[in-house]
Length: 585
Image (cartoon, rainbow, N blue to C red; front, side):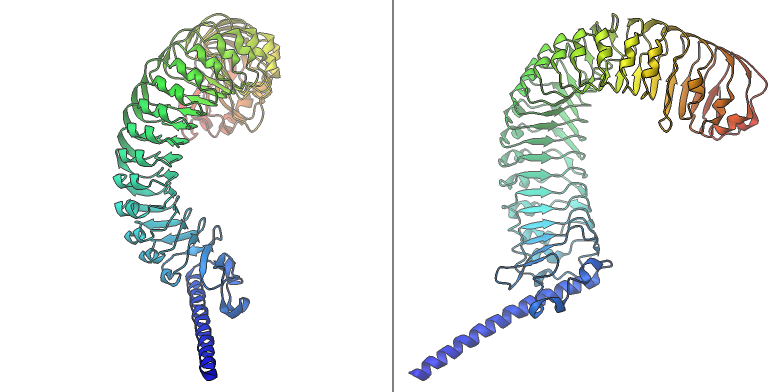
């Protein structure tokens, strides 16, 4: 009896030792597989010191950089080697040697070549990130065997081919699928709608074509959907209105047609709707007013018609509205003044009519206001002076009348101001000097008259000044021109007299100069010839005198020169006509 017990105890000890031996051998096999792959890489110096049998007990890799083992130290469960500068392929990576690998992260290296079929052996894999490498070829069919996968990231590579439907029938646990920035082609498979646990789908910047599958409406857990920059066409499926968890919707730069589905108004949690650069038409549905959490709305460069729905004023969380390059008509709704969080209001290049509503002055957080190239009438409202945070104001190419309100010149944060091509009369006031941060000023093609105030010299940040086609007279302004920033001055077709200002002659960063059609006099300055960045100069139809200097050859970038209809004598120096790209007017 006692001998039987001893025999049983011996057998148990032997079994435990054998099991421990087998586990140790399995772990050593994994370590050898890692070393074999490392040695195949062209650049893996960051792993050379860490990955060594000498630095790990019993040859186990559990203390190696980027390697994590199971809690009982019997198997590798995680390989995380992101941003290690690894260069090479996965051809020598023995996937079958890692039966318990759950997490595989090689993001941000210089790995290339195709993804081997052997990756299908990782039956316990839940996380795979191969993003920001140089992998090419198609996704292997065997990846459909990785049925436990929860997150798959392979953005910014050169993966091509089509998505295989079996991926989506087998990856039922997938929560994130990010294939951004590859060369994937074909249709988006209908089977993608079976990924009911998916929270993020990013197929942007690929070559997908065909319609957006209506089955996408079945992905009830989806919070982020990005299909931008592909060749998708057809309608936006109304089934998208079922995506009740959706927060971000991005469909820009495709060929989508038809109207915007009213059902999108059901996406009550949506914060970003980006559908610019498509061919959508019809009216913007009033149901858009139901998107109470919307912060960013961009429908730029489509073919939307009709008026902007007044319901847009309900969207109190809106930070940015971009509706440019459509065919929107009618007035700008007064309800827009209710959008107290609005920072960007950009509706240029439409057919808006009516006056600019006074309620626009309630948008005190506004930074960028662009209503350029519409058919707006009436005066610029004085309430615009309340927009103390405004840095960019574009009201050009409209039918605005009346003098520019004094309140506008108090907007000291302005960097860009464009009032060109309207019917604005009056003087340019001394208070323009308050705009010391102004870089871009365009007052061209109006009915401004009188002399320019000396306070314009306070515009020390000015880099582009356009005053053409007004009734301005007197001397050209003395502009402070900063070196290093290309300086552009256009003041043609006015009644300016006197000589070219000293400050302009000393402007070494002069890039374009247009002063034609004035009454400027004096000797043509040799200083112009020392400007290596000067691209174009037109001072025709003035009363300038003198002779051109050979020093004009210093204008190495000069492409166009017009001194016609002046009193300049002598010949054009050969050094000018020999300049590359030069064209004489």
